Length: 237
Length: 201
Image (tube, helix red, strand yellow):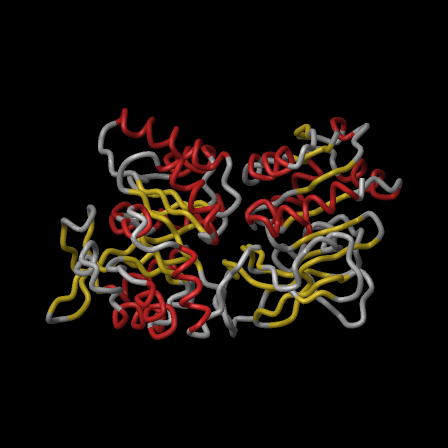
């Protein structure tokens, strides 16, 4: 079966709600908003941001960052997110994934997996890419899916921010190793990069942030390029 | 006034806002009593069939919904809400659906990635009120692992989706309607479907 292609605008700083609305209008298929604040005040701001972003949005919204327990996820969903993404908290307690799946449905649970290449294989990192774990990417993602994750958000830490393109090999390994949709993230610079990771990497979706925020590449350009490459893309006239 | 059934599974805010954007006035209905006087009913749904069936009973929604449907009040089931229109679902074998549409909701085959989460296209079958403004190659957002069957020919199934198998994407039996996808999460294509529903009122 051929799945549709999704693009997700990821927010680092500034006003996520405005960017989300803009990307929605420009043809993004989904929006991801991650909280990078560590403080409790930051948490309130984050929830307010999700509320504002969700308000006018006509496409799905994934919210993540700092979700430690079911109560955090409930707050995020109540604020308007359709799906929640968890990373470190799931590594520390995989049962959390099942709890989230029971509460919201497995389609609402996204496991974010941050990976660095090592000689021995693909190593999973926690805490925003700062803390190495003993986990191997495909094994951990598979386990996460068994525990309740309905989707994997795969970030190549090596490629993130480099503009060297997505890590197609890593993506393919995850896609072949798990039976749920995989969103590839990290390294996008050109429209061509999306063709590589979606067509060759087999990703179900590709995520980019700064190239869209900085308007270096438009979502329309990426979709046109994908269509020319024969990758099914959603057009919404 | 459109009654938006709220039974505690997922939040109704996105559907609510999508209807508001189209100029509709809605009221959240947590129980059967609050449904009286509704000109139309929307039954959204995210979660498990068992929860929904239990809520229909616990909140006294079952009879009022059936009465409204039989009286010709337009009813739109969304996602799990569409599945609830049927007799039953394999997701919760002991639970009862509304029985407004004959048949049983079944699990999608394991030959494809599950749940079916993401955008997909549908194929129209026959004439459809809900898809009257739709572009034929429009994409809609799906998030489900169970689906209603699409036996051919079946008048009520006005659009199907192919994912592992061919299942019912849009059903219309008089004023009882359902969409397996989330129109409130399907951008302009979804808006067109909701607009068509509002026009049926």
